[in-house]
Image 1 (cartoon, helix red, strand yellow):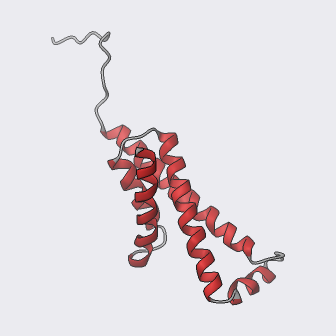
Image 2 (tube, rainbow, N blue to C red; image 1 turned 30 degrees about the vertical axis):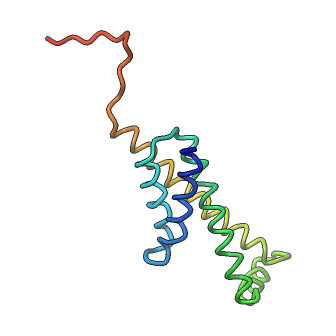
Image 3 (tube, rainbow, N blue to C red; image 1 turned 30 degrees about the horizontal axis):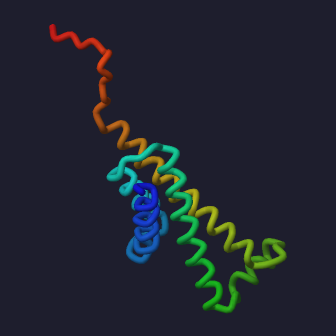
Length: 127
């Protein structure tokens, strides 16, 4: 359940933050969510990749449709791509990786900052 909540919150921040800050602020938002909500490093990275990928695909696709693919077709022609959808896929991959790595960074930062739990079998000497 926490995994789905993390994906939802990361998706919201990935959508809203680039309106006010630079495009890479999606990594900061995902890192903040992973810092606040505990989870494994693997789940944090996967949640960031899923949230960032879905949001960036949605944004790239809607912008491309709204502009009738004018710019993306010209860029695809310059890059010798057969179709402009490959640019949308590349943008999705970049957004997913940036968000996933930001989320992983937040999760690793949480593991550094949080105190380590001691097992019951460890001997503690108070000298």
